[in-house]
Image 1 (cartoon, rainbow, N blue to C red):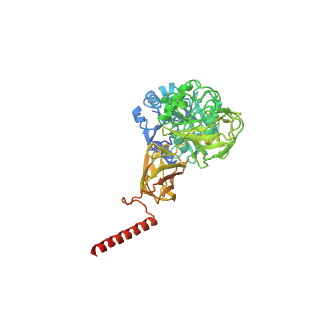
Image 2 (cartoon, one colour):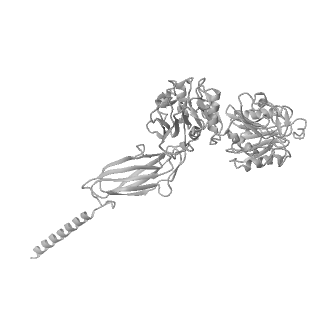
Image 3 (cartoon, rainbow, N blue to C red):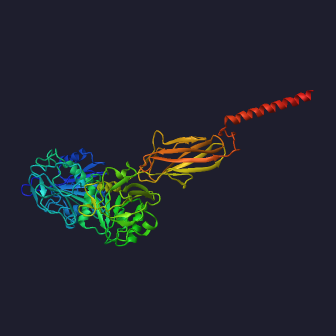
Length: 600
């Protein structure tokens, strides 16, 4: 087997590095262990890898599909020819088909003896095609997708004086992310079924190990780590037939915030309806329509099923307005999954108005928003929903609620920015942050019940009715119906104030940490101080962004003649004790007179 680098004078190859993953990742190359370790060290040094970074020498053995499935992502490159390039190509294609992520770099995409073959080659799994190698000193050139996660944290990249790369075009349907300084493709990506493939057009070993390769003082390690991480927990934008320029403009606005590191795929629901199994690949789905859906009823049923199964949905204009007379129908509409009703279509100019909850995660980094003349709905807030922000014209702008313990967010604006749309929100304002925040929104939400199943809303009253002038034990349940752990204030999770004609003690405190979909209980002992009405204010402090100080009032009335201190829990006034004392004195006097008369 010839060495790839030594053959570079005649034909040069380039390979792509590894990086950030949510679990273990693999660096697989037909190269020395020292070279593999160099890539591993550069990736680990970024701090972007959560799991383990492991290596595999392809010149010794080829991994099986089951071997690869132990990893979230695999970087593949070659410096020598493989023992069976067809088998390796088929295994990698099967791995991608099963949902795996592959980063391919030179050597592996050489169109000669060093390259992969099999289905990975013949079915165009790589975003950059296979081609001959070349070598020339190049640096990072034009970034074709600003803010793309593959370039997060990348400020400079020098490929080195020798800089092995492949002379090949971008595959049809793939997204070019960045070019070399001479215009040659440098980074590209695309989705293949449930999997993801990234092409990095540089040899992944650095100048520290192989002279003339990429400069370790630039951000090659970050590029490698980003590539290995890209595609984990992907997001989806589902639309009703937007043009490709509109879709790319929307994705660019989200990625430009650098708040979203995941891949974002797209689905045209004007032509077909996504299956539930397809949606379940994604952590969250943004859905809007600018043309009617293929089947609005099937869409509504599927998205309701997705939420029920644990998915998160963000709806935008077209769903929040009757722009086309067709929105999400079926169970979505019939069973109230949306935080906002579908309102009359409006297309007059408006900007960000009142922010009802300024510290809410959905409004993080949102300072200005010019909606232009983009479509929105004259929508109403649905029961149980939380309004976060309004338009300057008064209509709801951002709202959310919980359905089946999962979140649905409504953004009442057309999500495509201007440009490319000429009548939409200004891309120089903060609509991208609203979209990014909504797609990543995970928050706890506190629901209070007494008894179980009977909801006590925030800023309401729990009327316990007419009771005896004795201690009353009240048990409350805190349910976390949000998507993140609910944390109660460690110092004072439950506070009682404004006690009127009663005392209230915390008999049993709640747990401080409540996982999504679970609950905890606490008990209060309420003791009326005397006859008549009594009340007290109870505050639960937590990190629920909608109600960080959840407040309700306990109210009731104590019976006039029901004082009972036999259980040790009643309260008696000073006047009551004075009366009892006089009665005892009269009784003793009468007893004394009776005994005196008998003796006489």
